[in-house]
Image (tube, rainbow, N blue to C red):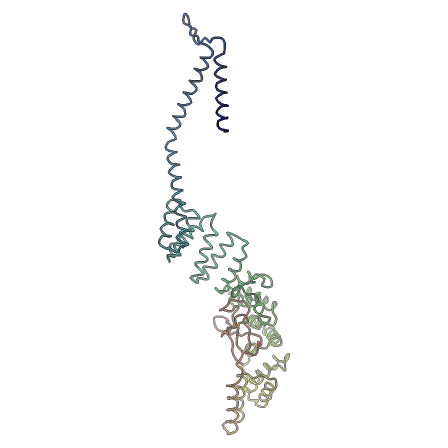
Length: 459
């Protein structure tokens, strides 16, 4: 109805205009040259002028159409390619969802050929290559994606996932750093970087990512687990010790060891690392003071091993052991150390007294009974009483509690050596020293010609 009314309105308007033109009075002289004069009515002149305008307009439009035919054809072909490319993208997505590897690769390649290397087509090509097991294709597409400013984060995240799948931890850590630079502020990426730093043994970077108090390591561990247990060490202290042991620059290593000891003064690896640095700088008195304080806080066999290392005379070692343990004289670990050094020095009575104190304390570990058997052999020799006492001690050792060892407080996996993070669950600072009955502090260090590494050793 509206269309009819509109048509009628314009028809009436045109009719009125034509009637107005036809009713115009007067004449117009077009040519007046000498004896020649051309005249016409006003209405005819206006109609002729209108007709000339229409003809000129049609000619101009025709010329424009002729000039722009190639461009119009190009636009038409481009639209057709876009429609075909969009259809290829859709088919590639469907093939990926259905797990059809060959179809996904074919349609992704077709989409790239039709639409070019756009973020969408590159991402499709990478996923199709990954699904088909063509890592070279997937990596090439992801690198092309990462090279674009508008999609760098997508490419870097894909390269990061590929590196993690191939267990290339150092390479994955590099991609994670680039991804955070391309898209800063992603919390999951910081956690991923911390976990990768721990996997690759880059303790300095892990310590930097941990932040004050280790807050940046929240969620690093098995399935995003939180802190291990109250018995575990401070993550900052553990990572600082790991970074100090791996640091080649002595000044930076010393700063890291001080940081570790400040974060947890009772953490034996920090005590050992700091004391070793002081000894290397010729400050033996300060090193012994750090070791004595560490023994008082958390006695451990390796503190004694490091403290007594410079002393070769057996009687002098027994005396040095007494000085080391003076701050904690009644601890079973103190009695075990004093019994060991007294027995080595030939002071059998003193060794027996300390071993009796160990039994009185309730400590029933294999190492204590083995030391007792050695004492009986040294004291009574190859006699009937001596052999009976040794057999009794060895029988008790077989049934005794296991000796202390490193065990993760999060996943409870035993480890032969101390590490800054559990190699199984990657929880930093989770390794504790103790037997099945509970933790007993500390860690150990072995000093070699090429550096220092953490180990454990029985008393």
